[in-house]
Image (cartoon, rainbow, N blue to C red; front, side, top):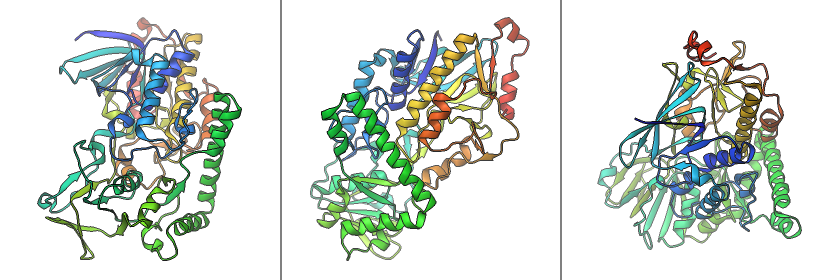
Amino acid sequence: MTSQEVDVLIVGAGLSGIGAAAHLGMRRPGTTYAILEAREASGGTWDLFRYPGIRSDSDMFTLGYAFRPWTESKAIADGPAILKYVRDTAAEYHVDEHIRYRHRVLRASWSSESARWSVEAERTDTGDVVEMRCRFLLMCAGYYSYSKAHVPDFAGVDEFRGRVVYPQFWPQDLDYAGKRVVVIGSGATAVTIVPAMAASAAHVVMLQRSPTYIVARPGEDSIANSLRKRLPAKLAYALTRWKNVAIQQYFYGVARRKPAAAKQRIVAMVREALGPDYDVATHFTPSYNPWDQRLCLVPDADLFASIRAGKASVVTDTIEAFTPAGIRLNSGRELEADVVVVATGLTLNFLGDVALSVDGTSIVPSELMIYKGAMLSGVPNLAMVFGYTNASWTLRADLTSEFVCRLLGYMERKGFAVATPRRDASVQEQPFLDFTSGYVRRALASLPRQGTKRPWRLYQNYTKDLATLRFSKIDDGVLDFSKRTVAERAGSAGAIGALAQRGM
């Protein structure tokens, strides 16, 4: 097994990984890097998901990169347009020259003696295992399993005579024109698929166990399109980005401070869209408060238009079992179907299921605390990108990449080889995410913890993170730096591993 070495090794060539590499190229042109991508193509989510209507649930002025303007007219873009944007960015910033496809990272081991990560990756085309070494490891593998969706154990599913499909693994040969479709779920994927399939299906039923908050928004941003006609592209993009950040943070803050009023307003907007005779109380009034789970966005109210036109409908009930002809509900009703789409969510995984160890000691993320939302206590020279639950993923991805570049620059100037967040034992633990979505609840026990104060607190707030990641001191008294030589480290090999084991 041969070994190669780079300064920074990035895991994942999706939205986050390509953005991180572009930041490195712009801010640290002398830094060598490579990207390991398990799949045969770049783009991550936007290449993986191929279901009808695939699009963003965030506007592209915040989902796009801070350094590269989104110039299309649609603010809520479809999947192919987003994929093109990501790949065009990779080409423009020469990131694609550094991607090694079909390299699925299995494990990463830190050695205090060499101050290096040793990363093993399986070549998915040949089965060979290759090793790479790096000074700094940047995890951009997303937050969910690409190989496994969340699929409830439905009774009788094998008896169903129709076809069962999953959005994450959409079959390109599926012909649903003129057929009866049931989409199980009420999240972002379901509300996207329903109107898209309704355009040609006989009828589409969105079968939900419980309602979700759904908000309609124009597919185009008229202010952004107007600014682009009058201002340079980068300035117009920056102004629109900040406008949308400010609007999002304002409404999020209002929803958290006044949940009853926010709930009333969201439900009222749905009632306005569907008419006074529609049973909004049953189908579009959740039992939880706004932003306890992520709100679903429907551009140009397309879901509501499909319902009004009779092409789609919503059923709120629970499943007793599949039958040969469809789905029998616990209410006794049976939904006949030719196609059932199981849009029941993702399987969250942390750090791409890569096994981490420090000086031979396995790292258990749930025993550690997250530093600035980017590093793990006791784990040297490793950062990760994990976006927002209440805003666009890329807002935080950009800030994390900037922070990593600042950290590397500081270490270079000061002659440091190692940077390790040192946990303050007095900081109390809290769950990683204050979110009640199913995919989060199912994985919460396996995630690291956050703390009750900076820099261990996750604020889910872009402006606060801007201060923490872009403008705060690198040497903040929490990061522990070391410039020891290999010979000096030899006598204390394993010390950092012990710290990691204790979560320090």
